[in-house]
Image 1 (cartoon, rainbow, N blue to C red):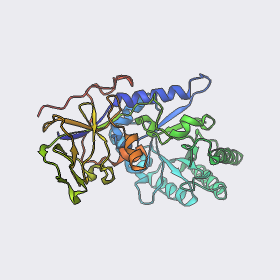
Image 2 (image 1 turned 90 degrees about the vertical axis):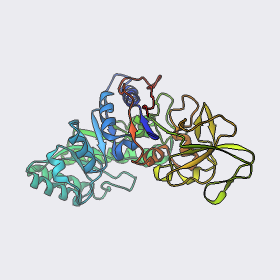
Image 3 (image 1 turned 90 degrees about the horizontal axis):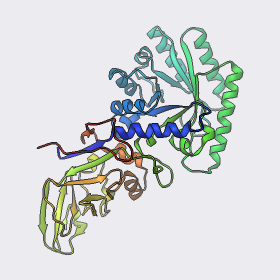
Length: 392
């Protein structure tokens, strides 16, 4: 195998356990964790990471689309699952039969889900979403009472069970932003309106990963953990040191050659060698998530040193200038990992590109195999997991 993204599932388990400890450290309250495994667990493999998160103490799973929820059920995972979006045309009837919680943020969405429940001949498990300031999904302050009334009417007909009320922050990864307090107030107001209407949900949740780390007053009954369970964060500076990145992107050099000074490298010859040097070909490219804008950055690690991407990144390959370093075809290079041996991290990739580590991890294409250490639930966040390339 010439390239792969290795996912340390033991790290995922340890990250979730560490987060759970942070949330309940005073011992005075029990806060549940929803492990968000949407978009194939941020590129880490949804089924494998769901199991790892549950082993770490998560009690809920979160996905974006119904198909993602059904894939978890088909894999034999029976933990509570919330579908965070409600998209017309998705298999809501099948989701209801599978016991998946569905989000309703408008009267129209709720009507669609209630009709699916009628066809499924069982009540839909509904979580009602309030828009407290993100202006994305959810009911506005003006429409929230109508959504509550419609949900209560569906409940009275035996077509719905209201299992939760929730909302989502816009700027929790910007500590001190005034919208954080405003959204907290808005969520409290939404809960009060629901209580007055007679809606008593099983769980209330507002906090995402950033709020889990910085806004304790937003924790309520459940906290949704996304990037943090993979050791990623959108906070300034990235995740705290007690969270460990779970993914390592690695490849083997496909070809090595010695070239003279003045050699143009890759499309456009934007890189020209200044002296005799050794070039190595890495079988990954922009189709795999290695963006063209990374050209020139020292984001490839070999022999404990970092080397620059030489010239234009191609669709499925790029070149590295190794100078006079002794390298050979088959040598392993690391593009990003936890940083234990000085290799780049996904956070550094994001910083180089002016984006977030989430985008880096989710951009690693499906053609790059995901592999898992043999002891996939055992390694601690201090030691990580050992890995060896398979023979051949």
